[in-house]
Length: 389
Ligand code: RFL
Ligand code: PHB
Image 1: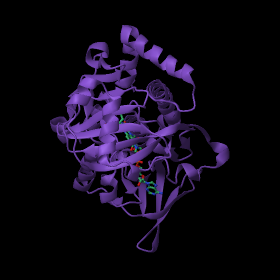
Image 2 (image 1 turned 30 degrees about the vertical axis):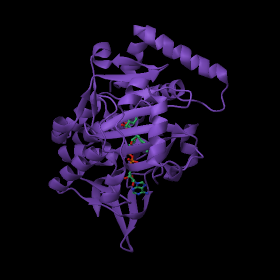
Image 3 (image 1 turned 180 degrees about the horizontal axis):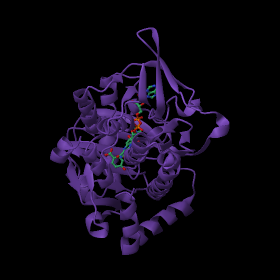
Image 4 (image 1 turned 45 degrees about the vertical axis):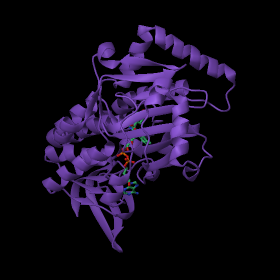
């Protein structure tokens, strides 16, 4: 089999890249190790920047998003018994859209099926070869049989634990990493959102976040030590802990109910440089991870895919490699700024168990400063809505 672009991974990066290439007349196959049902069962991101929404519009997959997403003009931080609200629209003229990653993935899968584009699910032992030269290949097994694909380019969209970044010789790649000494315990529940807008909470018992997927479905998180196990968190314990950490007005209004998903995610900052190795290009979580504070992960995957699709389209239209050569630098410039913001917001809002009272005092002082300074609020808002592409 031969194809122009082989995409590894059918998460949002791979599916969106496939869709943008397809609309430009470029032939791409996606290889995914899981089943479509498994991919759709992963509950992850839910907050989209306007740039991400615009890209989904350009990809022709925004009809349901337009109809069903919730526009969020503002975001809050609860601390010291009350709530600080950042009016994003007023501060920087932009807002956010609440629409689940699962829904984006579903919309992209449906568009791909309607276009008759090929996705090979449950591809096992995927491996990438020859990308230092001009004839890369991808190998995998399916139903016990070995398969091979020849291509012009490979796009590594296979997430943090994928095979593409790992296939790069160690001497050609540098990784920068920070692990945080806590995780987020998250639940999804068919209960009304705690408030109309998303808010983060800073509390001596630890961070919390009240988000949503719709007007009747909540997504909620509390900071927990990494040693914690989901089994030790029956729903009642989760709700009680959340109530303690948010402002009393919100705590009094919470409507509780059974969780329909519950999991613990560790927090990590990670960047691999560069993002291009000959004819292999990395995009999304395959190249970088942000802690979820600030909701940048999926949005960064979208900006990578924007740059990469433009570079590939440019190459096929004009034969010029200029944009392919510039891809890694362009993508990383935006990534590092989002890494900085996510790291900063994580440090501002969480309880760091091994840091003394000094950091805790600094966090409080910074929140007081944010509460009183329009300049500081504008800086937060500018980063939260997403820096320009
Ligand atoms: P994904 O989604 O991990 O998809 C990679 C795909 O590659 C497949 N794969 C392989 N396929 C073939 N062969 C192999 N060897 C393979 N290895 C892996 C996988 O099965 C998978 O289908 O990466 P992608 O596409 O780059 O997308 C990135 C986003 O998923 C991620 O950045 C966001 O979910 C991060 N994130 C958030 N981002 C936001 O922008 N806003 C948010 O509100 C937000 N909240 C979150 C989040 C991530 C979270 N977790 C659990 C990681 C909340 C959470 C809790
Ligand atoms: C979510 O809705 O899952 C969410 C919202 C904001 C974040 C992270 C996750 O910063």
